[in-house]
Image 1 (cartoon, rainbow over the protein chains, first blue to last red):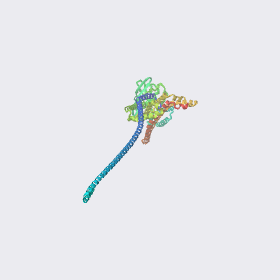
Image 2: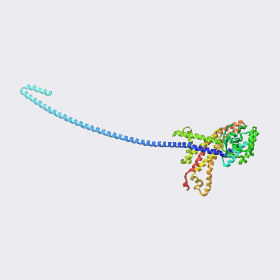
Image 3: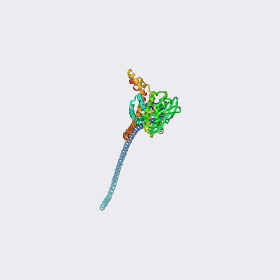
Image 4: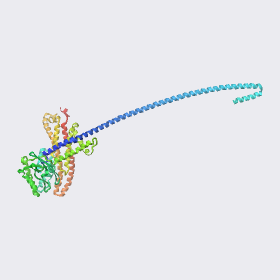
Length: 165
Length: 413
């Protein structure tokens, strides 16, 4: 008060007392809780960041796993398809071979049958030709024995018969 | 004026402050001006005006004739006298200046407020005649010759003071008054409690959420002091112990500086008051000294890695630096804030001085002065923050020094 730079005991007293009281009050009521919550928040943010980093790493790992799984599945599918194709091919080829064999067998059987039938028919034809010839011969012989004319007519009718047959 | 000048010169030599040389030259310049116009009746005295604004007082001057009285608390001869400073008031003189009269307190002791310094008036002391002459002249006054007489009488009175300063017949009581700056300090401290208590509450209420409002306004500064000042200077582990003090000091200085910049609010000069910065510096000194570890004291009293003869030179220097460091904190803050006030007030005075000669001169100087003042106010806003930062940072560095662990011991031994 006396001068600008002189020190007054009263002011020093009030300044020390009030400043120290306010310092202690603020320390207890304000700075403590404020700094504590700031620290808490800082730690919270740091934790959250770490957590995010970890989650991302996890994600990458998971993604790699998925990829693997997918590739495996694809391989498996390819394998299955290949196997199926092979099996189908085998079945088809087996089936066609069987059919071929059957067909061949049936054709052979048919041929044999036809041959048999032909042989039988020829035999029968031979038989009936023989019979006819014998008949004709018999008739001719009988007509010849009776009349030349009649024999002629008989020949003609016989011939007609044969042609009719 | 004379009184102020001598006290400045005394303290100037006492503290050896280079910065105060600027201040002194300003006041001397105004002092000469005043002398030159002394015979011209009531002159505007820039020196008085500036000193009135930056020094402490027993009342708050708002504007013109509006004063707010403050409690006066005096201890003398074992009894305490408490009364309002308005008891000293004796109306206003012709120029609107507050006049003072002696007041007899309930204890029977009569006090007087002489240049905001409270003295005891001894009824049978002859040394006070000069003072009474002042009071007398001020009471009768009205014409300029009387006022001039009063001014002429003032130095005589002061001479008498100097002569009898230490004597019982003119003792000064122990002055525990709530002065202007003490009151301003209380205002700042109460504001701090209200603001930071409410901020602490909102931290509790909005736990884990983003800051809002006042909390959001102050959080960057709290974080700044903790993360940019305390932790780099002291170290992460030990900083927490000092953070409450650093935060309190930082906000106290900053808010006090800002309060001092508001015009018409009493012209507080809290951080420009040596008594208050002394307390802050003393706290820094006490904390540094108490928390100083073996390493710290070792470096002071037995500097490692230095030849013996050098130790004899170094130890006294180191020892002085223990006291000199807080002293520098005190002086730097006081000088910076006071100098800022003086410069702004000097620009105001410039306008009034020129205005005394002619209104035109006053107005034309006023334009330039206002521009300079605006500039200075911006600088002062910066300085208000800067000084709070510098004080806090240096305090933190001193604490860091005191608590530093053995870092480079291996190199030394």
